[in-house]
Length: 80
Image 1 (cartoon, rainbow, N blue to C red):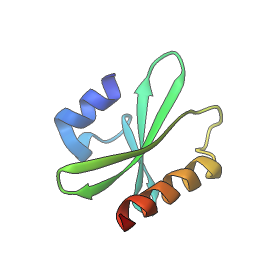
Image 2: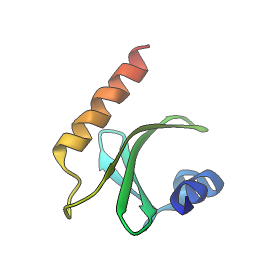
Image 3: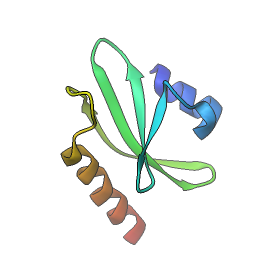
């Protein structure tokens, strides 16, 4: 997938249109396909990204319900 390959090769400096900050340490990775695929992730260490949640984006903004899922998973990951 182009978005993941861009993130892998360029790291978090890839910038828009591939990634966008969502706040609270979360980032949105945009996957270019016929559908609006999104993966929410966070930077755990300088070289480790943790993919938290994927979904098909249907509205202009990322729904709060999707952000809450990612935040809950991030908390669980950090507590382990």
